[in-house]
Image (cartoon, rainbow, N blue to C red; front, top):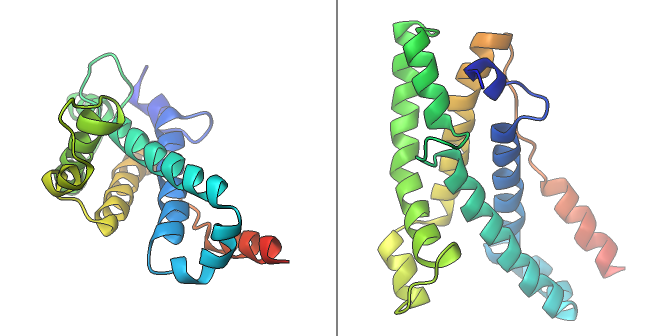
Length: 185
């Protein structure tokens, strides 16, 4: 598959991973982060549902972020697009430098996601300890968001080059507020 086809906006697996990770992050962070207190009464009424949802959202976040930078040669990932574009000399040196800087920053956070994925979410280490697992990975919630944003910047650099437009990820915060308002009725 050509790089141009890997960054289009219809049925694109990389864009789907970006959307999945973005929505998963926003919903998960609203349910476990500092805004949790305003939703806790409703969440307690639907305890099994929300505990399952929180877990599923976090699983999706980890797996989708991992897949964006998967290093296997037989997978669709941003690394493959970057290699194809470098080989084809599709970006100016200035554009390529900016993409590479964002990519390297993203890889720093991705390595933390990779630790979580490898040691718990895709494989369960025999001697795992959830608390030390997160300490070993060393990732904070805002770093997930930064990884998503950097990934979108890399994707958009390629998309802009081929299609002349940038895509934006949707912030689902208003949907979350409406959902809880409806549940509280």
